[in-house]
Amino acid sequence: MADKRLELAYDAAQKALAMQDATLGNFRTRANNLLATAALFTTFSTAVGLINTDEDKGPVLPAWGAFLLLLVLLFLAFFVLRVLWPEENWPYGPSAKEILARCDAGDDEDAVRKYVTDKMIEGLASNRTKLESRQNSFKLAALLLVVEVVLLVALLAF
Image (cartoon, rainbow, N blue to C red; front, top):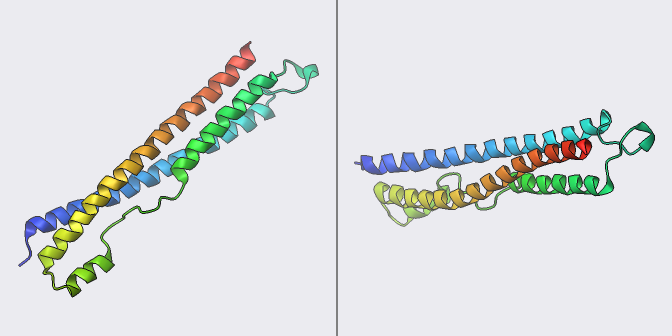
C-alpha cells in the first residue's frame, strides 16, 4: 500500500511547479504590456506633438533629451526581453522517462514517488532563482516606464 505522506509531498511539489509556471506566464504577460505601453506612449507623444522636431511648430525636444529617452526605452526593452525570453531547463513536472527508468530498475511505488518528488523539489529551487531574476527585470522595466514618462514631461517643461 502506498505511503500517503509521499502522495501528499508529491502532490504539493507538483502543485508548486504549476504555480511557478503560472507566475512566470503572468510576468511575461505583464512585461509584454509594459513594452506595449512604452511603445504607445512614444507613438502618442509624437502624434500629438509632444515630441517636436520643427521649431516653427513650438519648442523642440533637445537632441540630448531625445537620446536619453531612446536609451531609457532601449533598457526597458532589454529588461522586458529578459522576462519574455524562453527559459531552458525549466522543470514543469515529473519526468516520465525517469519514472520508467526507476520502474525498470525494480523500485517500488513509494521509492519512485520519493525519487520523483525529490527531483521536483530540486526543480522548484532552480525555478525559484530564475523566477526571481525575471521578477527583478520586470521591476526594472516598470521603473523605466515611469522614468520615460517623467523624463519626457521634464524635458517639455523646461
